[in-house]
Image 1 (cartoon, rainbow, N blue to C red):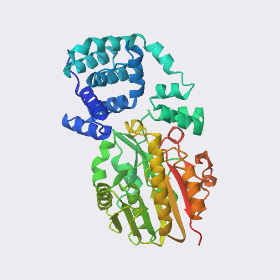
Image 2 (image 1 turned 90 degrees about the vertical axis):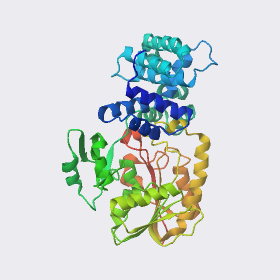
Image 3 (image 1 turned 60 degrees about the vertical axis):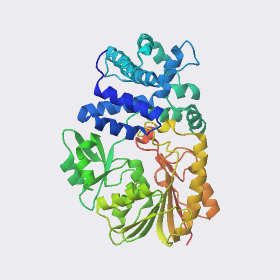
Length: 450
């Protein structure tokens, strides 16, 4: 038995914690990587293996099931984790020698005390290697939602949802994008440093920073696209000079368009990324109230504002559906709880935590929050509704119903950015990870009749 590398040991433990203990992959990875003091390239490799093996569980489990003689049997949890990692490396990791992927996976089985299954794991992995070309040919067939779900390692219900709502071509592209590295971008805290100063100060051998590009509202002036490791500016983030934020997320506040000295209400504010962006726009003479019902996330919002140096915002721990909140705001943002289907690339285990029932639950919650939010807007004021999902039920359906119930006027955002228009109603925006290379945000804007 060869010695397991620290990177694979981390990935193995992350797989087990994710699927056996129902822990979030990102948190499990941070703890495992820190415990083994991984840094630099070693940490990056461990993250690639961890996230990739979690994302590709659907495909790797299909391979295992295809080779099992007794279809009703499943490998023990430790064996399943080792096989998921080994098959991921054989099928999807170009940088791993085949013999190393097999040897390391079998060593993980033995190290976990499952010697009885080492022969089985070795045989299955070697068969995967021998039949890799035929497996690739089968996985290339994405002609139906069911086959696409296996090919792209997406839950079958989600493959059917996107297939039905968006068509086969866009559904395939979205599923493919969910397995690609997510965008790395940062927002510069212009209260402390300019984008030009940030580019000059932080660009180096491990990090390249450039101005964000794209149609309105995807390229606010304070956004920079990062190529390389964000570890190079972790200290700058702690100092409040920059904040990690995707172009899709920043586009929401660009549509909200808060102005200096205005009164702005940020509902569902945690963890405070957009809150900080709003605070920078309205300036110290503006007034901002941020509402977040979860105590830990409300603390995150307050900490974010403190780190950025903004003291002109009030953070309220409250449920927006029930609490009494000041009214007469110029602008209200409802960045609502959602199914997060537009952020699958950046959240490795998210796809395995979602369900059609979740979409219905959050849609009900969104409706309650939105109805209450309309009472906080002044006459002639505006409301922006956003989600980071791609689901007609939560997005265009929700927005149209809100306008009808509350007699709000829909602002035609698609007229300004036709390339980003929502496929179901072109007055709204729907960012697509495959096309726009950022988080899949839906954005709608309304005005209250004055």
